[in-house]
Image 1 (spheres, one colour):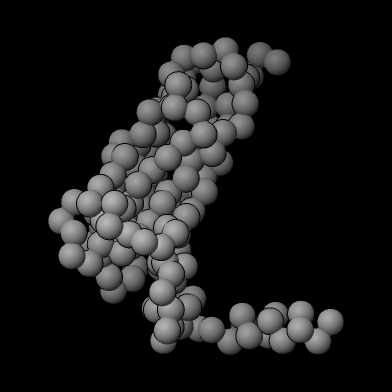
Image 2 (cartoon, rainbow, N blue to C red; image 1 turned 30 degrees about the vertical axis):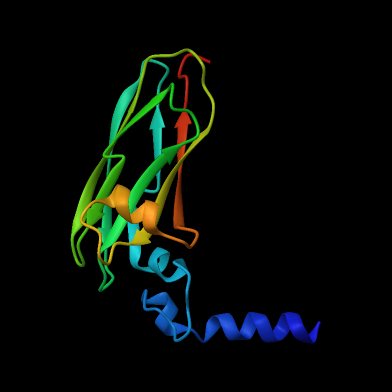
Length: 146
């Protein structure tokens, strides 16, 4: 029980982590997720399809590479799939759903790594040896007739 209390307290004191800064000795990409926001965090579609536009903002002081993945690529199209976002900049994210009678919940995942020396986002993901930081968005389909 004491171990749980110590770990819970230590997480609350990391204000640098909340701002998206790398802590000394950190070798992962977890600090990036705290500095990147996606608004809105969910999208709702109808079986007739549709388009949803979101904004990805990089509030960190480092350049990041982004890769978008989806749980069902037959129903959803995303633009861009790979992108780099400069510090303080934002990126429009377009999600399109094709016409399909299947209504289910899906997930869109924004994978992020630091793009220090890479010009292309695809290169940054190939060079990255750590697990990318992720932000998940909920994709819902609601049929008004049912």
